[in-house]
Image 1 (cartoon, rainbow, N blue to C red):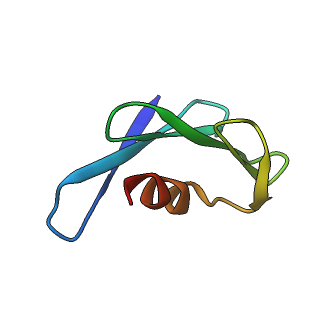
Image 2: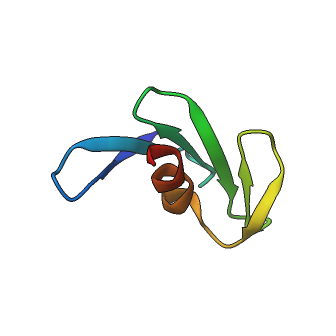
Length: 68
């Protein structure tokens, strides 16, 4: 599993994205609350309530939205 950190303009960590071996990604806010997931096989992003957000990987947008 790999982890990518999302930072704001001041380099403060506002969230992270974990990627597992199958390519599925899960995004967390700065307080480690799950904000969404991306399934590359379905090419869909879902929010923390498993509602579809859209096609493609939109996890960084979910992290930024949770930050505001």
